[in-house]
Length: 317
Image (cartoon, rainbow, N blue to C red):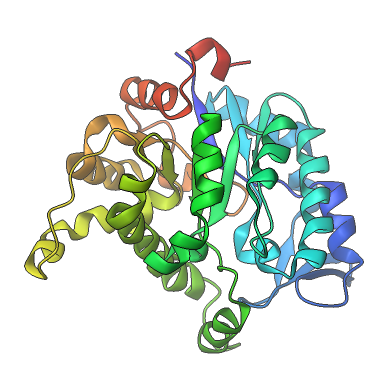
């Protein structure tokens, strides 16, 4: 059995350097011996560089008895949502740094939402990325989803999966308005993760099930953080006149920031074979939720093979 963590982040030197050179949000500054990230939507965040070494992160995988981890860009930074001329250099730094790490890490590709092009998908897949990650805000309405149909169609044609991660869509003026509402200094540090993140994931799930599954019948999609528990809203959907959502073998849900008991609740709603393991490390320490040891790995390993459409030996490479 191969155990895969489908959702981690790692601050590579290449990405840290690129963010340090910026004068507009997001950017990084060194202050009083600390490395501090500033971004538009949240309070400043201190990056623990000591815990970000590849050797340290590989050791944590071994401790968790997990074989491999897939790294993705942290979409709440808003890098994908910047004007294309600003986004591309940062994305290049992200891909260069992540892909240089090698095993036991794989990489989700990312693209600029401004004038997103199917060729962008080819570029990241041809570099060796396992699939594409997109911020939930870019998929959080039927109209937003329609803007990305060409990109999703190319991903579908290439047979690679999509990871949907919390983060803003391309309309920066809307995100700035929400940041003013959610990014106040008096708010707790966890405020965006329990409000905007959850809302965007639920909206992306609703939009994708409304029109995405029919438009892209062969695309395999992974919703991070159990889609903000959106599938548990099935009764409310029906009570408001929507059709009851059906279990879909192409739609998967990873566990980041939730424990095993919540994962089991979602399994009851979507089917036991649709849940994957994701940790969101280093943002979340999964051991605080007794993860991943409390999971039943047999159905998760089978679901992971189907999500990536590869045999177990390929996942373990």
